[in-house]
Amino acid sequence: MRLPLPQFAAGERSPNHIAEVIETATTEFLAQCLDPEDLSFPVMPPFGSWVKSTDEESGNLVYAIVYHATTSPIDSIHRARALGLSLEELREQQPQIFAMLKTEFRAAIVGFEAQGQGNNGYKRVGGITYQYLPPRPPQIHQAVYRCEPEEIIHFSEQLDFLRTLLQVNGAPVEALAGAAIREIYQLRKGDRDWLIKAGRTLSLLLKDDYDRLRYILSQINL
Image (cartoon, rainbow, N blue to C red; front, side):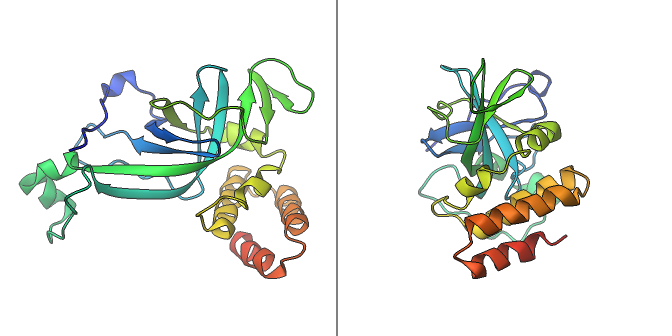
């Protein structure tokens, strides 16, 4: 039976600290959501939402976009079964259920922020931001945080990350690109100039595949 992750007191953890890396690779990482303090399920991060973690060895802050999330039993033998109860009834009659399930998500790495100076990145407070894969992904057991709106806005000044999203293996990449663009557009308070720039970038990336381009644009025509 797989043991749940060690948890910390709510006062010791940032509200944006939502998960911990449990599997890592060059292009993505798998994270397990931290259990809430009350009897409820961990909040599953939305499809297309932005998260960040750290490569402790280099100090790089790694940015990623959530493309797959699941809630399942913590062991691989027993499957969850329908109980016909509301969440409140579960809390009263089956409180152990909440300790027997885990929520995990996969996030595709789209860039990183490096400390120091560089020639092919763009500067922000704290380091240089690059829109390509970092030398290393976050290590196992590194904290995963929701990105702050200002971080997402700054990162999305450039749109090279869209090429990375369109190449994510095992993901509905058209829907992923559309979801990421919608979130940025909302954070930018409906900046039409930015949205037009994003559309033009997609048209260059998908110039030989009009059907895919049309499908993505149909999802971000806000």
